[in-house]
Image (cartoon, rainbow, N blue to C red; front, side, top):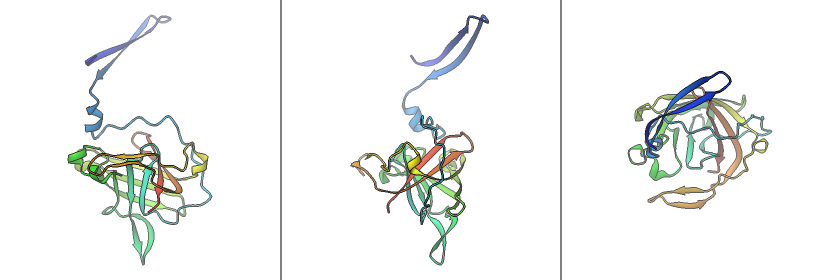
Length: 199
């Protein structure tokens, strides 16, 4: 099947027929369309507050569903201490695989996009923005918090990271600190769950 099609849903009790148009498209559409939002994983995370919060935010936070997806945070610092402000010049939504971080090569919608916002560990408050406008996308707003990893269905394990050539890494299980954050998109309701990677 290809092209413009229709699904018809019939309700015999009401003698009603609903017609819903849809398209059948090639797989490449999902990789090349920067506004495509992957379906939300079936696990809906009900947050529970952790006993301990991370001592720092800096470094990589990798998706629990896709270890190739990375939120790289660098916080503003005063006298060497992290503040709650995300440094937008050094913080990115990016591919974990360095050879995929050029959008013109990988066409990944998360190849390298600036992030800014606030991450307040003391108040357990996260509010960030991901700017995808340089690659033709939009600015996506997320709110979130740190959550208790033990209260989720995820293990303290990032899974297998498979990078393509020339940065090929196979079978790697990046170590985690045991800390996890949960973000929810204000635009789509999509949830992002990420582990803090050990530096």
